[in-house]
Image 1 (tube, rainbow, N blue to C red):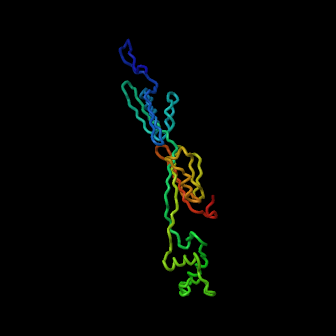
Image 2: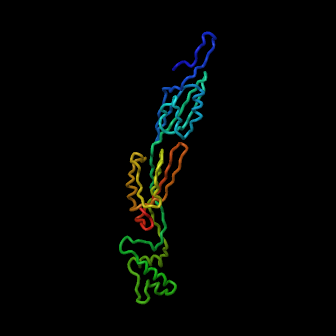
Image 3: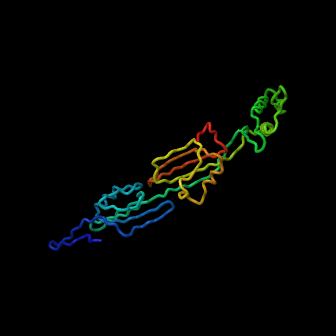
Length: 265
């Protein structure tokens, strides 16, 4: 690098030269999970580097000064340090982080309490809910028929099969509800940009990965989605961070079937 001072032979005084900022060779690149940080060092005139440092903002891309700035790397500024040295010189250290688009996935099971009358047997026909309602209506008006599981007092028809089994659970065991466990999938994406997007909240939608390279960990998303026949997207939250990245959290709830009359695909 050129000398930063010169000696006046006639006056015997030292005069500072205005030096254009010069990149130093000690650039460093550090990698962390989902992150590449490049730190560059520049030496030059204090006033010029001070003006640049004051314009830079952490969390945004480094400012461009066409008179001298070169490649600080793509991404956003994470830290900046400017140190003034003797002779009106200064050293600028600037770190720029480039985030990778990443996805982390969470599989959990949600507990849901359902009315016993929605019970679906594993074998045999589904309960006849119309007959069950007629039988339940006799609990106060005709206890004898109710206790005998008669639902039609005119011909003495009784409940049979799984309808009788359901009625026995209600009358004899006092069961009013039961628990089911349904899978939920949460996808958390860390993004560097999100200019155009669509959200499918409230719609039948199967979770997918934007890219297999962005999935953190050795998992197969298709094995998660195979745990339910259909998925309903139930949440979509987007939040920006101070480092300039965007975090998007999407949630899906699985079921055997989502009624297409209530939820569109």
